[in-house]
Amino acid sequence: MSDLNKKKKKSKAYRMRLFREDLLFLGPGLLFFTVIVLVSFLIGIYFSFTEWNGVNKDAVWIGLENYRTIFQGDKQAVTSAVFTIKFTLASVLLSNLIAFTIALALILPMKTANSMRTVFFLPNVIGGIILGFVWRFIFVNSFTSLGELTGLPFFQLPWLGSPETGFWGSVIVFVWQRTGYLMVIYIASLLTINEELIEAAKIDGATGLQMLFRITIPLTVPAFTVCLFLVLSWTMKMFDVIFSLTSGGPFGSTETFAMNIYYEAFQYNNYGLGSAKAVLFFIVVGLVSTSQVLITKRWEVES
Amino acid sequence: MSRSRYTPKLIILEIFLLIVALIYLSPFYFVVVNSFKPFGEIVENAASFPEVWNFQNYIKAWDMVSFPVVFMNSVIVTTFSIAGMVLMGSMTAWRLVRRNHPMMHVIFVLFVSAMVIPFQSVMIPMVKVANVFGLMNSRIGVIFIYFGFGMPLTVFLLHGYIKSIPHELEDSAYIDGCTITQTFFRIVMPLLQTMIITVIILQTLWIWNDFLLPLLVLYKESIKTIPLGIFGFFGQYLNRWDWALSTLIMGMVPIIIFFLFLQKYIIKGITAGSVKA
Image 1 (cartoon, rainbow over the protein chains, first blue to last red):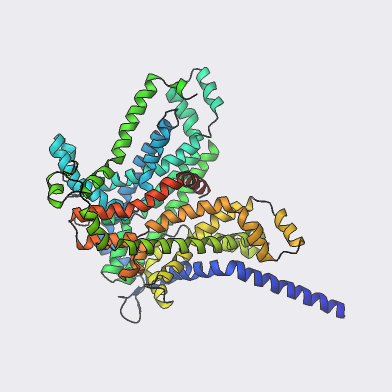
Image 2 (image 1 turned 135 degrees about the vertical axis):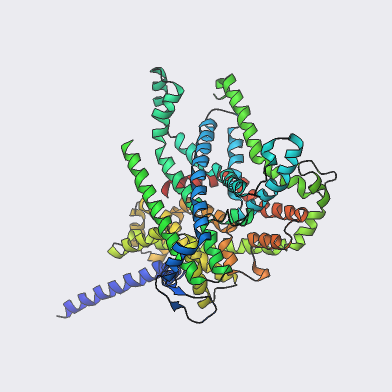
């Protein structure tokens, strides 16, 4: 009897110890994560069904009214969503294309390859806010001077002054900033390709293009998955570079959806409406990034 | 080996790439040369060298953005945020891997799913939550907030790494009479070094350059970070490029130095981090 009791006590003590250890090791991290991220996320969903200006004490429940507003009457939200989609498509294509090309060239035995890698990567370490301001100066002042010096029409366009130049200006800055990051990933992946495979293909008389499409690209699909994922998450959430480059202008034509949420909440004080946009934003970003990963994972297996 | 393989084709390619690299660097050229010019000279010709290399703009900008203050704030916020993230993240990740309980999997999935949530989707209620807990407008507050947002990636990366290291070493530490905390700090933490460096690098590039989060949380001039200081400056002197450009240079130099010194680790960290993610 007393033996059995002892055993019970021991196992209880043991469980208590495990619990104390859980608390010590999981507690702090989980606490911050839960309070800051999870609780905020859930409150945000609640906010999206309310009207609240941030000043009043209480948010008023209005059901789906905010969502109706977004889909029926919010022109700027639509404009910014369209801009974000176009910006994402153009950036995904251009940045990956350029990064992959540069990576292909930089794995060749060139003396300056390493220094060039450094140069291409450099913009990545600098903050988006700073880079946006840098490029505002380049587009507005330096391009004007270059236009006068060279007479090239490219430099004489009204850069950032029209919706088109604002769009392409944003794409140029993004591609300039991020190619180096993608390049690093592509180079790492290209370097894992077995040289014997290439040699064998050469002996079999494969042309350069054939080797590129039959060997190199299929073997770097994992890197494409990663790069696609990164660029999608950068561009869909784009905020700071364009915030300082154009502040969304001219006439809101270069406003990203992330900026639209920010303005709705913190400039116009429509916290409920802003939260509804934030929820929609989460759904779209979540769907796009998970389906992208699933789809490209399948390619990987097939090739 | 590399020299013997130089062909005329390769030389032409290299020259072409060098030109591309120069174009890549040209924005820095424009910012640097113009930051030494007085205002009139910039407007006249923004492509030439300055007539006189003049440090006047820098002296002016140094005070106007209170550079020493914003720099120190950036250092404090980045350092402590990352120190806490690494400590809590590795404790959490280790426990999640080694403890055999179904809840551990649930918690891990929770962390991983949260990686998909864009910051802009939680920022509105986050400000409210930060207010309730008194985290607004203080450096400690913003550091605590970074703990929360940094946890998913940190736990994710370390979780994957811990799974790959054998647990025999830890077992023998227990047998030798180490407590769980001793085992963790003496045995486990040192083994995690490689992945911790990756985490530090990825999170430094994020927090040092982060803009939107501090913009929402930090208002007081005396606690603003570099991106906020620069943004505030541009709000006041929108087109005073003579002062603004030197401000931008000062904002860039610290992180560029960090990059050039730790380049090898940064490149490695990015490859390691992205392959996992």
